[in-house]
Length: 186
Image (tube, rainbow, N blue to C red; front, side, top):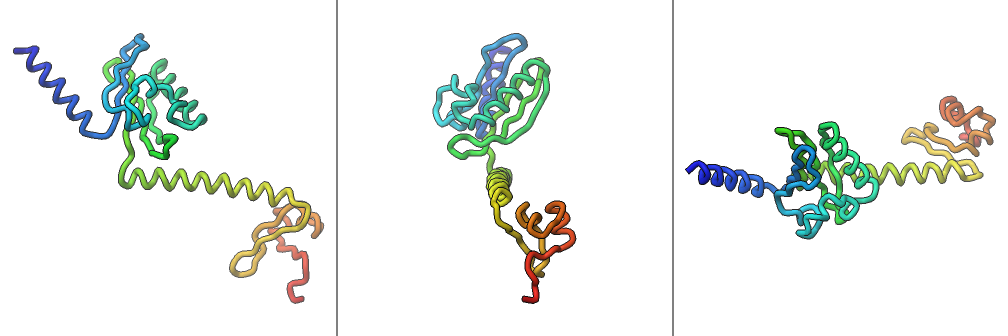
């Protein structure tokens, strides 16, 4: 009777775990082969569970290296973590690492609703920041003066060529003092 009750409890726990779109990976202490619970297709795009921990198969290289480092720290030192990664097909996944009952647990969960929107906005923001930095670097390298003004017409940004043309020490002085390249009244 006790075996049947334990089996029923295990079935109930598995049903609960499978009701939420997630994958759990559990390593017992000093055991390299993990137990995987859940549909790995949620993360990897296929049901090959051996690809789940080959992070570079479903994540961009930088995110894959980060996940490898986080999982190694979780397993070696019990350091927990929570992060959001984006699969190669653009799906945001929440990754959490915890130690529970002497087992290292990695939980990969599909991000939905508000969390998904936030993850997507965060990814778009990061991409725009990278593009802005690339444009800033390009503008800075141009040999001719470039400047920008706000809605009120106040000088807010200049490049190095502008600063040289107005004999300013640097960009900060040119903007801070509002040194004009041309006579504004003209």
